[in-house]
Image 1 (cartoon, one colour):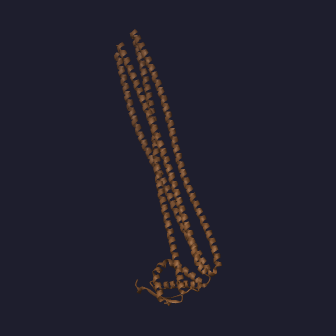
Image 2 (cartoon, helix red, strand yellow):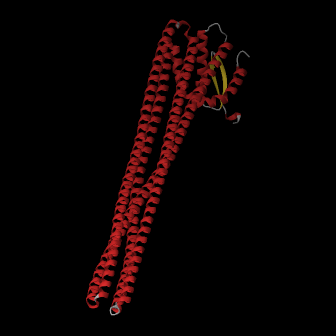
Image 3 (spheres, helix red, strand yellow):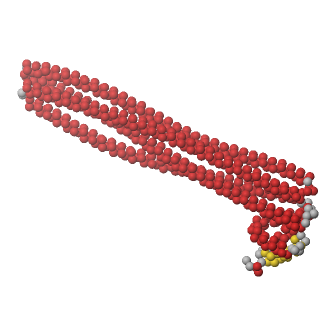
Length: 541
């Protein structure tokens, strides 16, 4: 800015005329000069023996002190804003930790769903094993019927032998005796087979009982797992409630501390008022010291309160984070232990059941082969005997044997075909049931995810509302404290300024206090020019 653009004005300061030049308005320069004049007059009134130079120095010191105090207030406001930003950053960090815990919880829910699916598959495998046992029982019943048919066929052979006896006399008697002995042997063998079948039936009943016991144990394990899951959820809810109670307790303690500090401040205020009334004659100099002392004490108390509040927030945040990490770690460890135990039990049961099925199948196959071989051997023996001893009935008996063999093979092939068809039908039904169960599990999974998402959204919204409420409460508390400090300062200054000059000075201070924050930068830029003009135009020079 050029020198021609500056404004020139003549002002009166402490009885002397000064020509000032600045880039601001004339009204502003007049207010500045009046403020300096009032400062010097007030100091001269309190200390009438001081010369004008010392009065000017004291006035400059007072104005510099006010500027420094304004800077401290600005720094305090900046520090408060930084603390708010740090609190916000800590809250954002808590939100991130909450989201991580949410993801871990969803992964645990997915693992639980997979375990439930494996349990369903195990139940289906057990059901399939029951069906296979039932099918084996049916096959045994069919074998029993076949044996009964063979017995009937033997009875028919016996009748034919009786007819041969009547025609062939002694040869028929011998053949009858031999056939009778063979029939007795067959009956004994059939009785043995019947006893073996009864024993296998009892074994199947025992296997079925063992399967029922294992199913009950599996159901109990599942119920225990559900109970542990409910207990963990109850513990988590209890910890949240405990955190809320602790937070409320800390808030009450904070309010009590604040009330105690306010009471202490009121007591200090009463003490200062009494001291002010007693020392009213020398109040002009001591007033500045008391204001500085009260301001420093107020700033120190406020800084202590802010630090205590910050430490309490950090302690609560760290404690809550530690508790969450401990609970999550314990829950994860217990879940992994239960999952491993359950997986081991499932594999053991599956291996045992598979071994039992293989054993039963092998035993049944061996028995079927044994019975078939025995029947074939008996048919061959009877055929050979009839071929050697009865020439007339050899052809007919051979045809009957071939017919029975063909029928037996046809029935065996038909049974194999029916078994394959039943097996294909069972596989199709199993696949269809498996598809339906998977679809049901997917629907349940979607429903559970929707419910937890709604709960999480509600929690986030509640936390945002609490954060807004805390921020608003903090701002209101800050405004209230600042307003109270201003009111108390005005009351002290009003009580100390009883005469007309002091009332005028208080009014000027109030006006300048409002404008000083906005015009401090301008005053700093023009301060050097004003000093130079004062030294140049001073009457003493």
